[in-house]
Amino acid sequence: MKVKLPGPVTAVPPVAEIHAVSERAVQLHWLAVETETDAGPPAAPMVIEVVERVKVQVAGLGCAGFESQPESATPHTTSSVPSRMADSHSSIRPRAPCGAEAYAGGAPRGARHGRTAPRQGNPMKTVCSLALVLALALASACAPKVNDPADIEAIRQLMDGYFKAASAKDSSALDAVLTDKTLLLEPHMKPLVGKEAIGKMHQAFLAAFDIDAKGPATEVRVAGDLAVAYGRYEETITPKDTTLAAAKASGHWVAVLERQGGAWTWGWVIANSDQPLPGATADGADEQALLELERDFMAAAKERDMAFFDRHVAKEYVQIVDGKPVNFAAVLADMKAGLLRIDTAELRDMKVHVTGDAAIVSLAGKATGTYKGTPFADGSKGFDVFAKRDGRWQVVYSQMTSIKE
View (cartoon, rainbow, N blue to C red):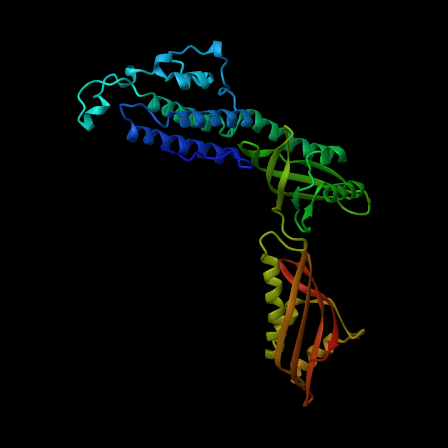
């Protein structure tokens, strides 16, 4: 009988290698069961070769507990294995007899073929079983460690040390966790890739700011040489330019780490700020109120709602159009008298920036109507400055430039 054996495995991940050996051992085990005869096990030498290959692969993978034993270290019973096998494969002899005891407590195997006399244990099946057990044990022994407490603690210390290094302005310690493939995603920045690019960012930041930072890991999960960690950071960033105010930042981070040369390093790191965008409020309520206020100004102009203007235009309001101040009180008087009529008014490209009780709205728009009976169609773009007083926003300054529509 000829049985094709798996060839040498090269450049294959250990887990795939283990699965291939395990599957082949199972196939040969059932092959032995189906082909056993009184003449003996014709495929037994091939099974021995499979076991030898398993041993070679074990040595290559460096998994403990599956090394070949020297001749003197392995007790055996040669009656259980054919002499031609025992002579050429002594290093894999079974540790216990493999004779008829293997069938104790069950019906003789030959009974299903009409044989009633007891048989001796089949060495072929014994060796196949050994190959199967060896391969399966190898798969278990070589499985990656999951959530090893030592790895979890090492990663916690690494991430905690990064934030401490930032506070201490230790750029070399910051760069120690990086590799040439590290990917860093910071809020409001383009992605940075590699130790050199991220290191330059570290140096530029530390040259311009002092920082008090902490960002402990909340959770760490490890599988072999890969890990993922999650945590929250809080920072106080103080510019070295004393004319600028300090700022606070906070958010969350996620890191994918790799073990290289026995040390954990950054693979991918993503920082997610939980602060509003610059010029935005936390819930966006003021931004929405100002956008609606700009729309209401257009509606009030069409409807000549003087009470609305009294409420939302500050007493000190100044309007500049094409570089020249406008007498806005006279404009409102003409509107009230019906000399200025707005037929249509449209706004676009509005953006809101809020800082406390002050805000700027940039925008563009156009309006059509009549002034003292003469039609007009004006387009402009610019910005309005607002102040919040007594819980309501009032416009205090406008600057507009005419544009052709």
